[in-house]
Length: 591
Image 1: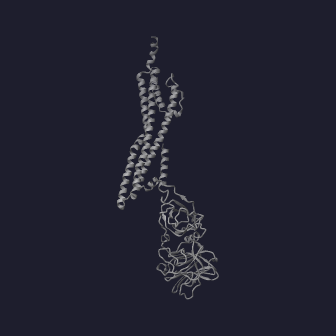
Image 2 (image 1 turned 90 degrees about the vertical axis):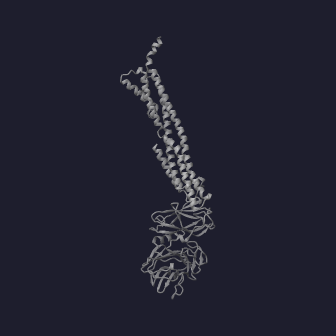
Image 3 (image 1 turned 180 degrees about the vertical axis):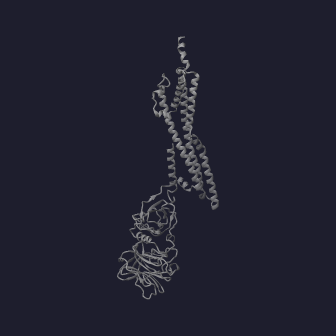
């Protein structure tokens, strides 16, 4: 009994959380698991990168582009808890070409364990929600994707540091479309958000592809009076220069190949990164720079302008903070065509939700409390019914076996069955008739030990033995009725518990509707349906308990009737075979 109850409670506890978190929202028909693995088995970024914009690159090899909106407006990214919605920005989405580039704001990119993100899609009514201002944290002061062709590049951050000059588009870059430089530099605005105070931290990063590496070329230039900050290439070797002080040579980049270049300053030291790895460090403080900046060439009015960069550039970013090594490495590893950070699982389709599923989704907390209480009542009542059914079945089978053996001893002394050990142990354990017989034989032996003539039992002795058997029969009936009162309580109480939940639910529906000022069918119908579900749950618990109670009561009455018949049969046989009237039978025959 206890094992059955424990198992039922475990199943109920396992089922309820599954009902609550099976799918993020029912309006989305599909989802795709995306695993972010920054551990040594994956991207191996070495340490936690913190908040990071991760590129999700979809193509026909990992995504079918079926069931999704033509613009990707129904895409939603949800954290592994299936609750937290992550910000995202769509850089490119073309289902005809079968390619999509999406930036997802991951709150914490850990190197200690992989994490899962769900990509939901398949909701034609969903509005567009992608927003670069939320996807990139506020410390990014400029982010150019160069997704627009032959126009000044647009800054996707909230600072709106849009380009001041038009650049030619370059297709087939690292991340979709980039920009081609060489004729004129890309000028950046002299905005307060891009200004650098003395000793201020900052980070520059970009993907570059030089056409040739046989000259000195400028990648990023800022000048303000005597202060200067230069990032460039000298015969293919990246360098950073601050106020005339240039870094030592780093590892070179190759012509006609994409390379990730980053420069980070903590205010006192400037580190140059190539392919995401620290290459060289320059002991120099950040100068104060408030003027305009140029990408791919020198700023206008420079006394000795640097040569322009001849090549392509993509994913240009500026930050007003010193980005950690792990984040720079994650960018370099994950933004390329062969990312080791992201892995895609098989798409999942939501099983069609029934009306009952929508009702469950609309249930408030108070309704779940009532349903949980009813679930406990149901589990206990079913455990009792199953246990009683097995117990009554064992009693009935044992009684049949005992009666077959008892009737075979007709004409022999009544205690012969007890002396012969013909009754199996399982029958002795389960049969209430055996316990009646056992107490009767014990009474007879007790009187024999006290000197009574058992072969001439008086009517008073028979009555005493019968009374002992009646006492055992009463206790057996009580034993069979044990815990049956819980079933009767469930039958009577479960509908009232469900009705209580319904009343509370309806009250809350009307209160919330009144507070919201919306009293239409769409606002009250889900809550009303969820409230009525409590009453249905109460009836669902009570009705099986009622049927089970009546069936068990009938079986209990049948076993009780068998005991009453056996008491009568034993008493009659005792009076007939060993009663006082037995001594007068020969005299009557002589007469």
